[in-house]
Length: 337
Ligand code: SF4
Ligand code: SF4
Image 1 (spheres, rainbow, N blue to C red):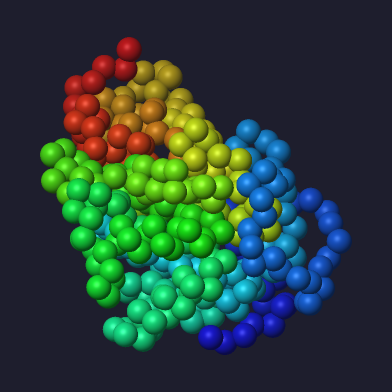
Image 2 (cartoon, rainbow, N blue to C red):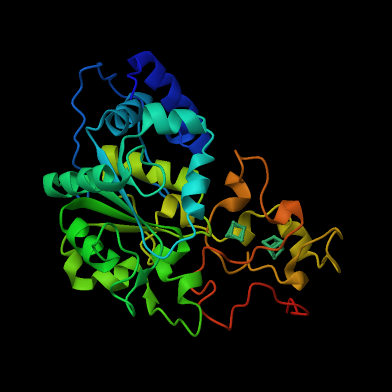
């Protein structure tokens, strides 16, 4: 992994903060030197520095630069496990705008183990994974649901995922359930759920102890949500969370309230068919019930998002997504009042 000079980390931190919308909340603070200590262990859960309703963090550019540097040089280790997942959240992460995909992999984030991104394979990867779990003190990202009904499924080496997750969770400093499958069960938990798929939180239950768990739902999750959460964990502790344990800075407001079609909704201008202008409510939009910041963050390097592309929000960040037949992907002929 190449080492970047601090100046480059500062530049990267600036673009990351702009991308996350954190620059407006920047506080003036003493610049940190290149030798400033970065705590590899995330701060205590209560140690939050956020202030407003959606919890915009108050971090300086140097603080964010230090967090990125810790992620890149292994000071802040990252372990990434897969349960019942399509790897879409990994693909989404690789679509992060800052920096480009190759840089994420080769320069900026030290992922000690990832089933598809690790350069090592076979026994070498297995040994790297075990060495990291034994050493402890890492951030654990879990992608995918837990096959609780088939405890021997999703093996890594000869160890079932349920066993590996239990072991890895015990030594993690914080756990991030990435994507709706890990956060709530998602597609693998859709009825009749033959594998008994459940969320990471439900599986770990009391085994979690005092280890903080953060959910980042979305099918897939936006790369900003993961990178922003990791940086916050490293520099300001666990961010303020919603009742679903999601960072309020990303999931604190309903999509509908910040949708560019909000005025059309209020004035009864509804699209009658796909491609028509107007609010997509009558075409089944679930933005009215979904908490996420897609409408202001946008996807694919902040270029566009579902509604502006003409597709109703299907509530992919909702707890019921795929799992509850009462919330199908698409609804038709629903009335607005
Ligand atoms: S398109 Fe969806 S999110 Fe936007 S205003 Fe209409 S119902 Fe709300
Ligand atoms: S707008 Fe809705 S369906 Fe689209 S990514 Fe956001 S939460 Fe998912």
